[in-house]
Image (cartoon, rainbow, N blue to C red; front, top):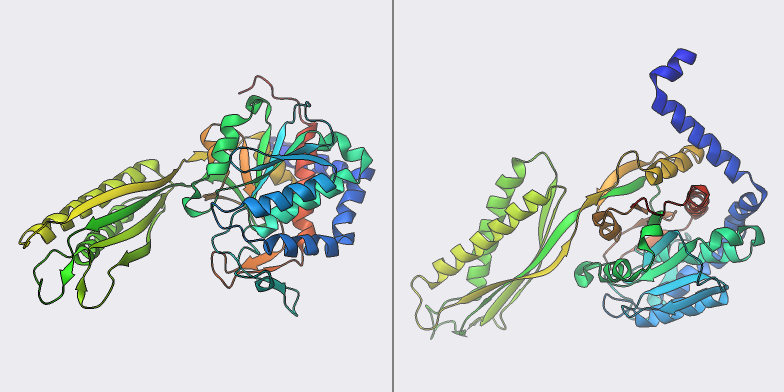
Length: 426
């Protein structure tokens, strides 16, 4: 047995970490706090319902932010809005205390309910409606953590170590604006031991690598005209169709040569007013993602070449005014990766070992991209339960098993707070 431990030192360290988490979890305060999540599941579900009924599409999160701030204040936290629209909360009157942990969840959704009644629980216990899973789960977890820490006097010291953040601008063209602003403005960024980003429900992953992305809008503009009388006039829809076809063909070849995964998606295509009119404009929006920043640069170059080629072809035998084309960058999400030996990654893996969660380390695009790109310790986690249909009108969330995700978050925070202050380590 002794020789086995010497042969596999990493296993021995991992086992010791799990034992440390087990001892922490069995402490009276944390033991009772974990049971609280089960006891108060009805309250947690009700908060989830109420917040999801407040529409919060990207760039229009204010009503939900105001509601969220009010809830946190009622739970004993000192909450405020920053200039970006993020909700920031510290415990009680400890605003001057140097927090060391940031726990965040994004406020915005891709789709918003037209009416509050569009968000409702079904007979099988599932919550239906846009934003119910992404990111109603993360926001609800923030409220649950806020309340359990407030109601547990022995955990007030842990609460003072935490900054709770409900941030704006995570989805789509929000371009991580809320998290970018937060990381620029935090006065004690160097003291932060960890960013825990709560996004979605799944507990089977630990996102420790930031998936870099670029987003573009391509537009072609021309004089337009009548389909018969002005036949031969350059057509923006024809041009943009040719550009898309050329890009997809060449991007497919470029990605096939790479070991790292990549993706490209034209998610919006617009142009024209009637079937018998030559359009005066057409536009498309493209999302590029890759684990390799160099491949992103290559794909961006392929896009430029495709647009230039389509423009030249459409203008080659033009009658009258020529087309013009423009490529506009809508967003750029930075990449980054948490080191394999990071104390943060080792801590969450130990917690998962204690909770018997078979999680995997993965790469995704989340608010964690921003701190990871700055070399700060950050991970993105699911908040428990199950969900589906994200980014659609048919989104749903099943809260059964949510308590496990909440326990995971709480134990990770408690374990990180026990670690030595890393001031000066960045």
